[in-house]
Amino acid sequence: MDAKLAALRQGYECSCGQTHHLSIGDIEVAYDVLARIPDKLRDLGFEGPVHLIADSNTLTAAGSKVADALRQAGFSVSETVFVTPDEALVPNEAALAKLFIEVPVTAEVLVAVGAGTITDLVRFAAYKMGKPFVSVPTAPSMDGYASAVSPLIVGGFKRTFSANPPRAIYADLDVLCRAPMWMIVAGFGDLVGKYTAKADWELSRIINNEYFCQSSLDLMAAALELCTSNPEGLTRREPQLIKGLMEGLILSGIAISMAGSSRPASGAEHQLAHYWEMRSLQENQHFHLHGTKVGVATPLVLGIYNKVLRFDPSTIDLNSLAESHQGPETVEAAVRAHYGSMADEILAESHGKRLTWSAREERVRLIQSKWEEIQRTLAWLPSAEVVTEMLTRAGAESSPESLGLPDEWVKDALTYARHLRSRYTVMDLAAELGI
Ligand SMILES: [Zn+2]
Ligand SMILES: [Zn+2]
Image (cartoon, rainbow, N blue to C red):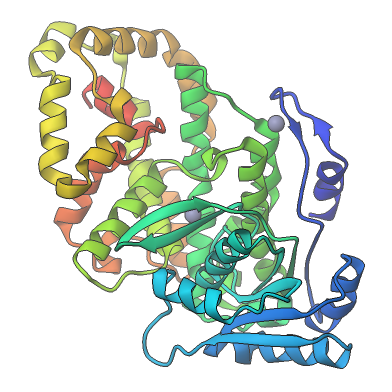
């Protein structure tokens, strides 16, 4: 990872046409990194008061150790601890208010000790307070550590807010290896989702001429290869693999900043996961970790790919496709009926996905003309079965049934999730071709 990041830190002009650079000053995934955090903060130029944020679990796992080390090194340290005995912490208004109340005005830097929820909360609060923050991940559970955005639940809905990436990321390998297994397999699920994220991006580059950066994808390739070649290693908590998984997840966040959008890390599998997340929020049900849902969604999306790539679009009968075509008004009415009060926002986002027949006919012809290139480019894509097996070998949930998702949610997600975002994926391709 270090060599890859060194080049980025220097900044370079990429063949994608952008100049990439890395704004995160220091990243380390290693043993005994917690004890070295005081020195590292000084190297980053911090001397003043530190405010540390953790929850009950992450305080025990790593937070206390970091606070002690900082105090011993002469830092003044204050703390916010979210007490989470029974229920999981939710990144909502109440949690944010607690931070705004408790973080002292004098704090020079915030230190977020935790996984997704703590990191997302602190990232957003730090940004609003105009303070830098340092991330101390306690589990390789998601790919947002290096990210510049915070997904939060506001007014009962999940929304993503702009913020700043952390100034540094210090992940202690000992802590990561002791993370709960359900968090480790969630991270693996998020990483496995990069297969279909990459495929969707390649697809849209070919069909829609969308901006594309191969280097951002290359950044994650080694970690994906390492973890998917030996998924059983995760069940044994092999340090080499846990480190690879964590690095892959951090690099995925960096790939997102390189591309300027979550394109390299998020495709149809994330749209399905997002749909299930929304629905569980609406119906007030227990929801699994983000990465677990992404993992389960990935073989579903690969199933669509496997089907689509075996299809020959030159056999499409345009007359019968025209007869079954649903125009923009029909689709809008269906989306409105399905999403209810959220429909306006969703319809505005995915306006371009509701096609008149003449627009769709043009799309079909365009796809037909690109078909050979699509098949050739996506020849690397694994089958749904291969990825299902990888997830199973890692001890992760691999099917909607194993997550307890009702059949109806799966069917609805495959029909309506594509309208959640303007981003083009294989679900849109399948809809355009009438598959
Ligand atoms: Zn994700
Ligand atoms: Zn690039």
